[in-house]
Image (cartoon, rainbow, N blue to C red):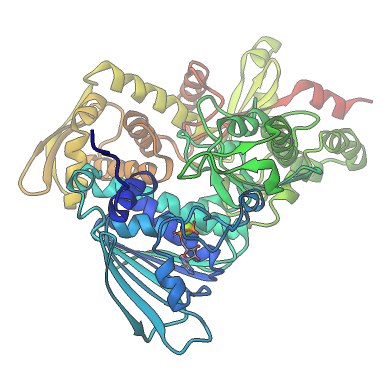
Length: 600
Ligand code: ADP
Ligand code: MG
């Protein structure tokens, strides 16, 4: 029988390798951007068209390549980053396999332009499906620019397998964000078609986080820092109150490489234990630095998995660093602390024996180690309304006299005399002490649970309007309303399509006011905001958006019946402690603390 085994031609071998390295446009983005960072670039520009399906271009100002290297870089297993097997255990670069460019060039129309600083002319190479089409000198900027056109053009099965544009774009943005976080000192920009999506200037990590994820992160970050002989952990965690409903922004990097590791993820979340609303996920960006000899990054071609030789030790340090940042090493939860310190500060302005007060209260706060909490946020200016420290909280005199008036007998005092305070809070006497309820957060919680129940239960009651109103929306919003039509009906909305991009609204949920148009439009707007910021399941988002639109607001004077109904409603909720987006709804100023203040 004749011999039948043959070596595969390079083009086929490369295509097979590409199957592992390049799964989708985002994988090419990652490989190209990592190469730019390995080349010492201080500026990296990413341009994509058609979510990377038509074009992925990465332009950097790094060290560039010589003519020979430019050609070599396209060979499989050709790399400048390791030379011996031992180098694998000294890795400081992102790449090392030497297969990315060869793989990408095997499945696309590929163009490389590169010039080293001392060269007058650079090199341009064009490749299609591994076949070099041309090579020539070219005048170009210092650095490297690689364009990848029509990815998988020669493998229709894979091209057809790509997901819809928004999905592929989300993957690209994910890769972009990871690299931008790991290298805050590098400038990055991202263009999709001609739209500028991100323009990130070199900055501190905290600023990079805000630039990437939005202003709502300002003042919400606590710095982490912990070091042992084995590892160093640095980075930021988000305040527990700002934790999201979906597992989104959680990043762990090892030696600047983004990794996925459930075990370390658990280390972080366990440090948050007791501080989070159920099913919410804290924000974190943590950097683990460890001598490369203690890790093995060679476990998976796309390299988001990693092995440590002593994973438990790393777990312990990560957990400790987060706990330290949370200030929970010793005592009470941070949530109480925040409310405490506001009240402590304000009360202390109104009492005569301030000295005594300080000893009683602030010393216990010191012990709890939580006082450093605010210091941890120095890095990022606080602009969240939740954390403004200047809000008046309690005016002692009015506070007491009002209480006295409303508490004719002990019975009533214990069971909850209530009044509104500063058109913002509801003060309630409870067994455990004085309860201060945030009227808007509490009402949002009550309404959220009510609407969520309606969404589960089918058609909700509708309040019919005498004169149905026509509403015209943008095409995108119109499409959105059609998409969530059955949920809107469950909530109690009634409407019909009425011409192009228009609806006629004939009913709104009972108790949601009389301005159908404003309510409807406001709801869609809020729904979209939630969608982009929180990534909630559709029904939760909708219930939350409607709760936000229809709740009482700060500054709104409440009638006694309203106060009653909010408080009763709140404590009938399944999760009364937090508003749907995770802000505390109430705080109790405990009787024992009040007593210790008046102790003779
Ligand atoms: P690896 O990054 O694993 O070494 P690649 O196939 O991604 O493998 O790249 C091959 C080689 O091409 C790299 O080792 C590097 O020397 C060179 N190279 C790739 N991209 C760039 C770039 N943007 N700037 C300078 N050199 C580059
Ligand atoms: Mg590489």
